[in-house]
Length: 277
Image (tube, rainbow, N blue to C red; front, side):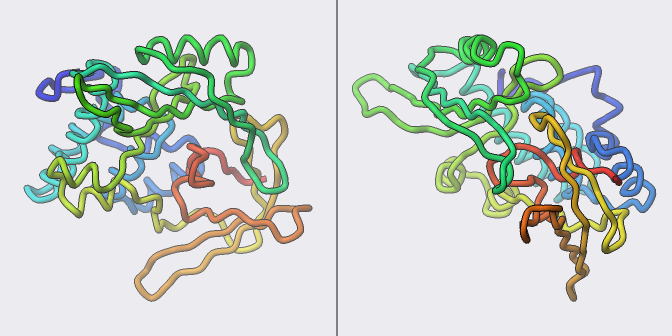
């Protein structure tokens, strides 16, 4: 993918102007849209952590970067350039590149989303990665996640651990979902401190359409059966909301629903898999 070429996806043109559509929980999506809680940077965060391929995120970021004022557009445009740059390094590497694949078997236990992990091999292309994941998780795709370390092998130089990304089963195929890049790496390539902060951010301090004590259901794609809990929320002096889900039968276990991801490495958003019980 050329960094100077528009990341276009015609099928998603209507989604770009309304990032609310990316939220898979219908009740949360309709509530946030009705109350119009989302500004340009909230929309950016929804795009970054949504359950869609990274290529689609780049396309949406590009269009979002044309929807604000000059400074907002500059900042979102810089985020788009991060995605375009690193997608190009995945699909059109400029130096010898190999991909180390580790597979996570996702499950649900007392400590939440967790699973076994193991090295599946080293591959030359992203297409080979997807093919390997298809073989390993044939028939049980939702239970798998691929964590990939990108190793660059320049001529006459040491091997460089460049960055990381995740592979998820999204809408029928294995796709690059999230980029994991060290802050110092981004700063070394001239990305601003503000953009680097937003890239690694995992929170949206949004209100939710539930009252304290309401019973909710949680079922992520890899869970055979849902779990249930009650919600409680707090609002701080800056107007930021914090939400927790106390799980039934889990002896005090709770989920911090203020994060855009349930668990730091889960890849699943709080805005997608919660509904009223």
